[in-house]
Length: 65
Image (cartoon, rainbow, N blue to C red; front, side):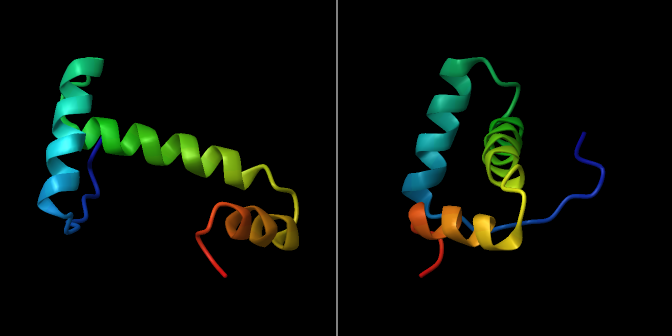
């Protein structure tokens, strides 16, 4: 599942929240939880249809201005 891994830096408080939630939710690791959360978010955005629609959705979510 994690054949091509990339290291990222997370704030310690955010990591603690991720570890707690992933454990309670039954994920095998925080990495599995993060991967699943990102896949869900990407799936919501990728069905936008056009680049303009994608930008509109990203603006609406506050990811871009």
